[in-house]
Length: 242
Image (spheres, rainbow, N blue to C red):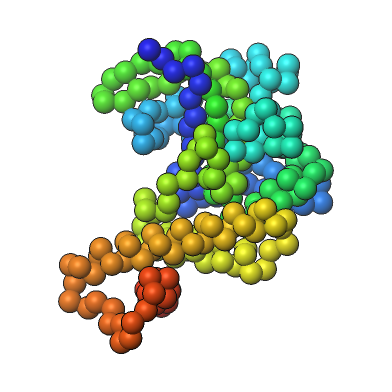
């Protein structure tokens, strides 16, 4: 049985070194970038086909039926970011949004500005697909919304840690998050979520590094008893030196 409502996530890493976000302008409150990717096989074994968004954008967007929202909270008024302009480009679905002049909107723009947001998502229903070569080719969808996934903390897009990242990606992400926490000018709610993400990535970095050194002869030597959090900081300092 087909799911009525599905969610697909894309990350900056899906664009092979290019930025998923193309422009951020705090003065005009405008953000442009990609919300979907064509041609690549995702973690579900699905491939979005060029043209899969054409019909739904043409039919639903003029009626205001495809909002740009935060974290898939489609029924929460404060999480409405904009009525976006949507386009199909050769490599994916593209959006242009003028973000609402609200505190949520301002924090979202600042997170874009500071490089913290690296994930977009969209909610949809599959209308046409085809299975071949161990993949599901999605040929047409009904698009319900596009989402800025601020920090992956929503229940519909559960945050499961940073374990899928490579060590260098973890270090880079950690540096972005800690800089944003130190220098940012967000609301208390956003600072709290940033702090939770930093603690999570510290745990994941430590675990991943400990697993890697089990296969080497150069373990980190701790000369005095430490709490688990102190040990994690010791490991992170070593990783940041690399």
